[in-house]
Length: 408
Image (cartoon, rainbow, N blue to C red; front, side):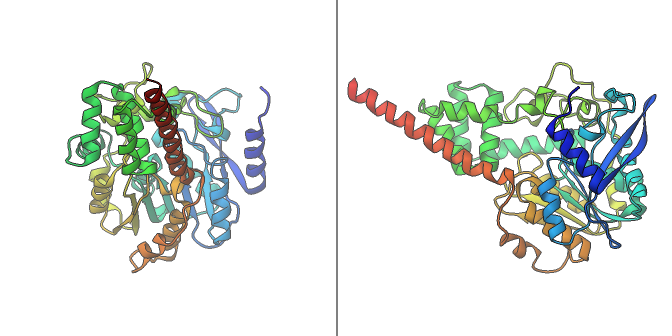
């Protein structure tokens, strides 16, 4: 198979500023790749992306550059089954049953050993928070502090909490947005799956006003192009193929569905978080590897729990539960932020990571400092692009309606 530009990019960075650790993978072996641009004698930051299936090496190059400029010793491991950690020594894709949460957590411990790291600040975002917490359960002596950004807590428990939250906010509540959504559902103009996805994406990235504007436009027969384009966003999450070295959901399906139950027990109603991940060939849910709600009270290190005000994937009630369970945890709310500071507000993510490294998570002023930071990173552009797309589509469709009325 020909080597791609992204593969060459990843290989060059691993050779220049990282390494590979040989690990068991069923009947075979695999080299787990990692990068650490500027090793130091201090406590490093270990950053774990979301997913399952998100690459670490290629997608987060700019994040690591920012960290280095801020004097942060950052390490990122490529998740087994993804990118530079996808192939066994024989050149075959790793078997799906060798890609488990337990194996990934032990990979991380082996990477820390290889890099000569005794303890680290473990930063996880989204699915990465689940890995971070399981790492804390199984390797507590390796954790100096922890940052849980947009956290997960439990498979079935989270689903129940998120369903209540989403439906209270977007469907059953008294807000004008919920009223518009109910009207759109009653009009039967869009499928439930499309409604779920479009409203949540626009709400998270462009805000509730933009979401309501698009919903009311659809009720008026306008905004179809913007709706279709937004509905197409995120299809990669359930497509099963993705893009090599960026996001590869296929080989981690045993984790996503078998261990985390992302497609387990859909209820078929609007704003069911399970509906996003439904696929015909999904592995059957077998159960979680750890009972995190029962084990988090034993965490004895400082922990920051980051939660965006507009996060609808792992919303505030889940973050509140995690904060309450960990004895030395502090909630770090971020206004007007969607899911995952690591992706949507990396400067805020690094500010919290720096506080964890410096031992100042509980000091006054952290939230105030974050509020002054500019929003940077690719995901931060999505909101303005969505609003611009809606504005353009509504302007064009409005002009067409006026022309049609004038002619009629």
